[in-house]
Length: 323
Ligand code: MTE
Image (tube, rainbow, N blue to C red; front, side):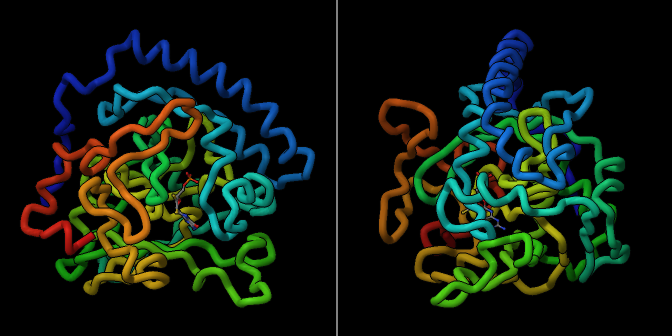
């Protein structure tokens, strides 16, 4: 399998240091503001509050980061979430995710590979040093954010397990633990989704250097509501691909079914590439609202602005049919 080691991003897209330093100043002030917002979790007795607030040391900004967009504030990133395991309202994850215990945490890698492994999250953190990756984050609901994730290359992680030639896809699953994930308890009309939440990628998509496993944001370990302790980020796809709180990765020969495809096949496909030219059956995908900004909408970019890096993955696919 061919894996590119060098960034294929033009040097014009790499953030100059002064811009980066200004950004860090902005991040510090946003994070300070957010401390007020995070205190309720502590007072509610989160078992993992310490892991949540812990800073990563010596983070470097990745050359893959976008440099053109202003960061969304820490407060918006951590209080406006989709994480149905904690309720369907955008504000629910920030209220209820403190109940999730994220230590100890195991992640099993299995299926079509020569070196399957049951990982402890601490060993993953030791073996795969995290870096900061600033990415646009575009939700299928036509809102977007710009998030300084902390993470590492998904491809580097997968390669360690020596996928066989039969490994054409990966499937990833979220934890099922209704005692701590209130949204997983069946309500009057049954369960909101068919748990576990699951997602899949084609193996070459997963190996693309832009795809990461994120373990934090804003320089800190991942807040529970954003998918602690480990989640997927594929910045050229709609946000629903970014499966949170992952406990299983499986290499498969067949294309796995993902949660939203199973839920509403007419509305959601396997690929979920950001595409302003293909509308959702119920709304346009041509523009988006940047969360936290006051004015208007901005045009949505093909592949969320990462066209140069990923378009070649789909050169033989009709993207209007394979959405
Ligand atoms: N992962 C799980 N396990 N459960 C979910 O409900 N929602 C998805 C995705 N990952 C979801 C999930 C959707 S629809 C989006 S837009 C993103 O998470 C939101 O990530 P954020 O809350 O960090 O912005």
